[in-house]
Image (cartoon, rainbow over all chains, first blue to last red; front, side):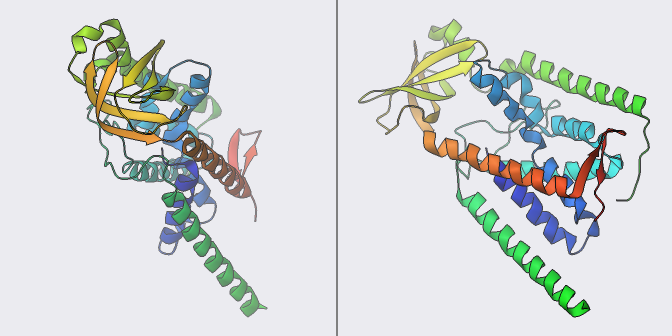
Length: 161
Length: 160
């Protein structure tokens, strides 16, 4: 798996870039996209069962498919006042998740991107699952964006006063 | 945010339950059908009749549970079945490492690997550590912008 630090930071970075052109991705909405970026990994609940010696991976696999993630996003969006907007943002976050999970290296198999209509598995075997370069790069880029934004805010405050 | 979709609380519960029901149906559908759509036989199928898979290419993942000079053992779990596969390889592995193998199966439990990925136990643990940090960042960022309204049972934006 790409770790959650990478998923969360990459979603945040994408929102910061898109925010320049589209206000929709900024402010409080960024947080919803970041939640969406972890939705397919609700499948990791299987780890809790694995520690209890119960194997439920083959039962909960649909959680890590676009169809399952869309339904999960719809359920979560019910907990927001502006449900449709929340749903769109969660879906966008979910899309970033699949995008960054796609290059993970395995010996075979992949993600069931078209389940339940098709059982084909899709994966581009590029990055090891325990890779630390992606989170390091994501952290560095996020830090630079954060510092630039903070510097800009401080400059604006000085100009106003 | 733009559009506001107004749904009553009873409708919200109904829609929520309906969506969860669909999700459960998908899970049951996958669980009851995945074996016939799998490219390679499952551990359970091999355990029930290892001879019939002799010479076939299989793909397995598991945790290293024993290390020898010219082979090592991985324990693979599949539903209620635990099965040990002997991997015919001199690759340097340690107890607790995670291994994915694609190779030729020899009855009763030997695999001659064509492709193999080893994730060190320590490295695997670091993925969880990084994930916990990611979760912590998410919680902080989310609750800085949103708070839970117990009356309406919804998240509402915090006033800045």
